[in-house]
Length: 214
Image 1 (cartoon, one colour):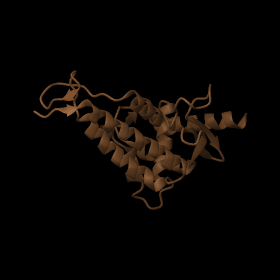
Image 2: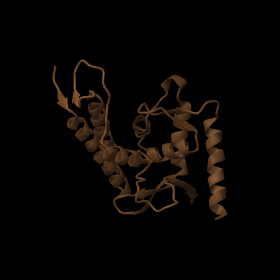
Image 3: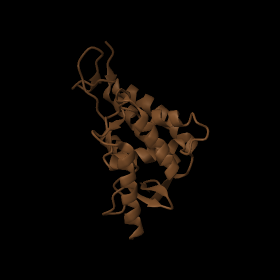
C-alpha cells in the first residue's frame, strides 16, 4: 500500500489548468500548431490526475474506494478555460463566447484573461460545412466523438478548408445552438431527431440576419 499526499493530486490538476490556459494563449496569438499538441498533453495529464484516488484522510490508498479533488483555484481556472477563457475579470454583463456571422465567416468572440481583452476566431463557411458534413456522415455508434478526433480526420485531407484549431470553434458554436450535446470527457453527440445540415443552415441564416440588422 502506497500513500500519496493529497497535494500531489492538487499539483496535477493545477498543472492541467495551466496547460488549458496555455491553449487559450496559443489560440489567441495564432500559434495554432501548438493547440493540438498542448491539448494532447493536457488530456494525458488529466487521465493521470484522475487516476489518483483520494481518501478522506487526505492520502491516496491503492485499494480503497475514493474520490478526486481539485483545488479551488484549479476548478476556477479549468472552468474558465473550458468556456473559452471566461474568468472573473471579463467585462460585466457580457457573456463569452459569443458568435456572429461576418463576411460569410463564423466568428467566435472570446475573452483573453491574459490580455484582458476580447479576441476573435474565424472559420470560413466552407470550413463549417466540412465539419458538419463529417459529423453528419458518422454512424450513430461512432458517437460520442471528440474535437481532437474530428480535427485529425479532417486534416487527413490536405485541401481541407478547416484548420485544426477551427474545429473547436465550430464545435463550440454547435453546442451553443444545442445541436451537439456534451458527453463529458468522451466528447459530444448529435442532438436527438435533427437533420444536422438543415439545422446548421437555419442557425447560420439566423445569425446572419441578426448581424445584418445591427
